[in-house]
Length: 288
Image (tube, rainbow, N blue to C red; front, side, top):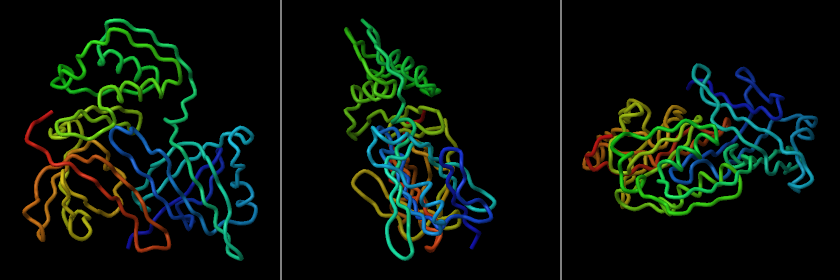
């Protein structure tokens, strides 16, 4: 088994590194249309008393400073940052062996810049471009979707007062209702890029890869009403919105192209391995 890596950087101070990874358990999910993780969870076991004191934070958000947290993980020859945000709670538990349990919000959720927006007779596409720019994100909209009725719909009067993130979330809510229905537009944010896709179209804007037992698929895929669930060995390159080709020798009836709707990276240094769970939607044959 390849050596696993997991470490944190909190307010610029690093806990663990490639050669001395933390004994950490983690759960980080990226999901379409909810944009980014609502929260992520980390539990660390092998910290010194000084580190436990340094990381533990007051849960009263109006009293304690907002603490920046990054999580880097993967394998010794392939690891990267998979979470960037702020700590909401960090509390010790257990004796004599003490763990620190951290809940954190993604940086996108805590964008603090307030804006006041007033627009008349403008399309959702123009609003989306403006919100992406104000959030500091790039926007990828395939031409076939740029002309879709959902994005071309004209809004007579649009007003918003609040954070730039709430502005972006409001637009996506108006378009999708944050529900998942057939032929719906899907929105993903990862690594500073907003990707717009459609649930049943192949997305050629991201690498299309095959997932099978040779490339890291674990066990048998689990079909559901709109697609399939797949577990693979941790792959930090997989992203929500990406099209994958599933190939299972044990369940060939469900082989084919799927769009990843959500990606959950999870695992434990003390456990068997790191994993990525994919909730996938069946592709209907269209191409972006």
